[in-house]
Structures are given as C-alpha cells and as structure tokens.
Length: 65
Image (cartoon, rainbow, N blue to C red; front, side):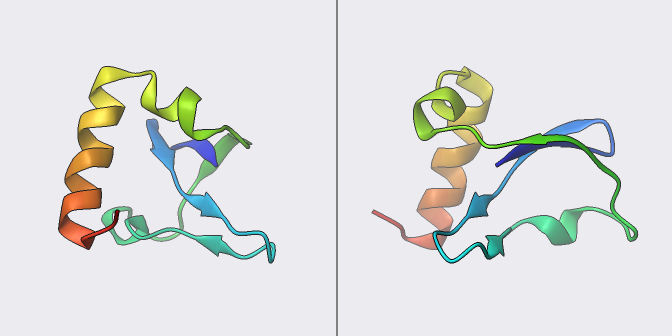
C-alpha cells in the first residue's frame, strides 16, 4: 500500500488475509492522518531511487530475503 502520511509518502503491506502490516508506523504521531491510500505493486515502489534505498535499509535491518 502507498499513501501520504503527514505529508510524506509512506508504504506498508496489505496481506492476503486483509490485514495491514506497517513495520514503521511508530515514526508518526497519533492520530495518523492518511490520505490517498492505494494499492501498488513492488515494481512501482522500487521504481523510485530514494524509496528503493529506504526499502533496502529496512530489508537489511529486518534480515528479509
């Protein structure tokens, strides 16, 4: 998923079960204002250089493959 949260582009996962998994939500204050949420695929997300760098840092920290 992709949306604007507090004016910043933010991504999280929508699992096949319908559950939202956001490993970095705690970076935002409560209540969180989410606008323009939409489903996007991995290719779209990684097509942006800055976003790809952030993704790779998160992936390394989480030890994902």
